[in-house]
Amino acid sequence: MRLDVVTLFPDWFDWFGSQRHVANALAAGHELRTLDLREHTPLSGGQVDDTPFGGGAGMVLRVDVMDAALRAHYGVDPVELRRERRVIALTPGGRLLDDRLVDELAQEPDITLLCGRYEGFDERIVEHFASDAVSIGEYVLAGGELAAMVVCDAVMRKLPGALGHSDSVREESFSAALEGRPEYPHYTRPAEFRGWRVPDVLLSGHHEQIRAWRLQRSRERGATGDE
Ligand code: 6GU
Image (cartoon, rainbow, N blue to C red; front, side, top):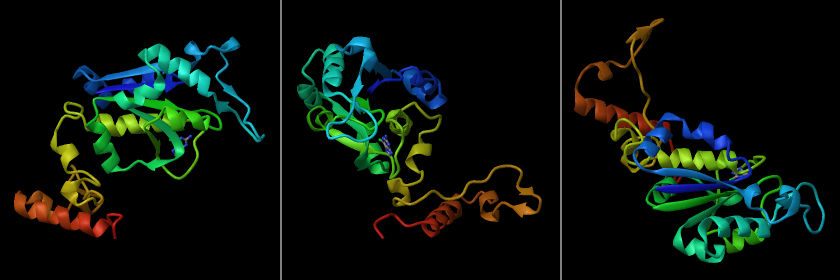
């Protein structure tokens, strides 16, 4: 997968790219690149945003700046770009990120994430350049960068080779294997600490009983969202 992030803060992603599962995915041939909006702005003084028409607080990312950045990087009209690859605007008003959407994105060969800042994007960016708008929750962040990292983290750990053990992705919280429910509880050594004992079944070595216990605990823990 080739993941590009269009951002005003490309260096934030240096740290992100050094996280182990991300580094593993990169070593396995996947790519995470950043595109600096300020480098491509046609405006003087590195300007990328402007005050909102109609008044109000904050600054809005300009559509001509995003057009120039995407055009410079991909060499095509950004209106065409979204037909070639998934172009996702990160905005609190977008489709809520969940495991289903993460799975969907993990199948894509190419994704571009657009980060807004301040009050967000000129709406024409979302309308004409993006194929999707995605939100990571019902609260407002100061910019899309952290949301982009959340999307990248969730998607990249699903890529082959990102995690040590392929089962850790298959049977985890909200996965189909757990019927979309939260994961069962985990324990490790010591088997007893301050009188708190690990459930006997997990120490029993009976794989079938362990499987049944885990599924039951997962069911007790939670609704699937459809209920
Ligand atoms: Cl994607 N962006 C911003 N700025 N705030 C958010 C968000 C995205 N998702 C939830 N809050």
